[in-house]
Every structure is written in C-alpha cells, then in structure tokens.
Length: 398
Image (tube, rainbow, N blue to C red; front, side, top):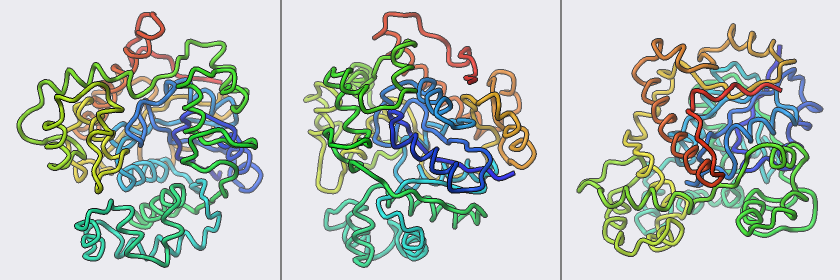
C-alpha cells in the first residue's frame, strides 16, 4: 500500500487545497492521502480562522482520508522547526510520498537548493551571520548569501518546500517528493484577484471585513457547507488581545519564552505601556531584523506560556503519540496500515492513553490542551455558547 502525506494549515480550506488532493489522486500511485494539519494556531503567529475540527472536516469531505494534528510548538514555530515537526510526523506515520505546493514546480531545482542549503545555509553559517549582523532577517540573509537561489528563496512556498526536503534529508527519510506548481494568486496577495485560486490571506481578509458572501464565492462547497450548517465563526488575532494584555502585565524580568529573543523581549517590555491590541502592538515592535510573523509568534508563545527552547522540541523521536482529528470511514484500512508501519501511535481518545505517555509526549499534549482550551473559550464566547472540553470532542468521521 502506498500513502501520501500533505502538510497544511487549511486556513481556510480553499480551492487550491482541493485541487492538490485531486492532483495527488491523478498523478501518483498513492492509495490513501493523509494530512498533517496545524491545530488551532498557525505559523504566522495567529489563531486559525476556523477551528481545527471544521478545517479537518472540510479536508475529509474533499477527499483526504485522515487528518492528524501538528502540535502547537511546531505549528507556531519558525520555518525550520515547523518543517522538522511536520516532516517527522509524515515519515513516522509511514508516508511514501510527501506532497506540497511551490511557486517553482520544478522538483529537481528544489532538491538541488535543499542539498546545498542543508550544508551551509543555516543561521550558524558565517556568511549568513554576517548579513544578519547587518540587520537582515534570516530569510533575507540566506538569499543574499546564495544569490544563485535568490529567486527561489524569495517565494514562500518554495522556501517551505526546500525546508521539507532538508528535514527529510536530515532524518534520512525514504519518502519521495511531489510538488504541485502554485496557480492563481500569490501566497502574500492581500486582495482577491481574477481566477479560481485565491490566496488564504485574501480570503481571511474578506472574512475580517465581514464580506461573507464574497468569501463563499471563492471557497469549495465543503467550506461553505460547514459555515452554513455548523457553529463556525471566524477567529482573528485581535480576539486574543485582552488575554495577551493580562499576560504582559505580569511578565518576568528575564526572557524565558519559546522563540522570543532577548532583543524582542526587551522591546516587548519597553513598549508594553503602548499596548492597545495585538496587531498594532506587533507593528510597534517591528525592527529591521524582526519579521512581523516572528513578532506575532513570539507574542503568541508568551500568551500560550510556551517556554521550552527549540533544541528541546527537536527531540521528535521522543514523541510517542499523535492526535488523530478525523478520518474517512471508507479508509479505515489506512489506519490499520499506519498501525503496522508507523513509529508513532495515533490517538483518538487522549485520556485513555495518557498513562502511556513519556515526559516529552506529556509536555507536548499538555501544551496543546492549554492552547486549544483558550481557542475554544474565545470561539464559544463569540458564539455565546458553552465551551466543550478538548478531550470531550468527538472524533470526526465522514
């Protein structure tokens, strides 16, 4: 049996995501497709616009066979750790193929860049350090250090794809790679353009503006159906503003949070008196060598009380279990197959297996529980309904 894995946020699930599922069915010999999906928070340092349950269900209805949750330390990490966490789970769940979109669409080109950047393209590289010392972000410094890859490294999906390949090479994974050339609007396109495929950012902006009717025109029926039939309301970064402000009032004197550098921590403390909401505060904290996404991730990690460092989270072989959000009942053979070939165990009911967790797995699951509990509280407050405990939520079956 051949299986394919997709790493995704589905924030929200849109036409391009549906197209990728269909593309894999047509262009590979994979019998089943499973998704490693970010939970309630994303790599941009923001809450997902819809709940993980709604996004997972949309993916299953559109053709995915199972959806597993990428834990919050990885879903909200910088690109290297995000990629390492997701690729590790895909590999340990037994995927034969790892599939991703890219602006390039040329796998040979992406692999060539990955092989070279793996050796001398890290933040520890002397040349990259030099550019970062001059005030450039890591992404810009790496592009300057490798001008032959500058065009590739200026496109966000290319960067992610290259990092996936580097992660696979580092763990000596046997997975093969499939890339689908991105069509339509660019990843960072803020506004709706012509055509079927819109950026997730433009779609989120439609939701933020309250233009729900226009939003529904540009997403597949699976997303429209879930919006209409289930209790779904969009969540945005500023919905967390009051919770973060309370946290900032009691910050310790020393920096101790995940992916919060000393310089960023000092800026946060020095400007806390100017706080109005998260979005404007992130703008206030902007500096030449700090990206907006990096600042938002740091603020989110403070809010979620994530304190372990990146080296700790790289111990992915210590992770014994992974949360299964849902599966297609016609694809139960996939879960049997994963049970035989996988080296990480899918969890359908956390309380039933908690006694089997080692300390690393226990830490990661507790961090996810705390993060999801906050998201559920915010979501249900907007809907004026009673929150449901994270571990009481039913497994999604389609």
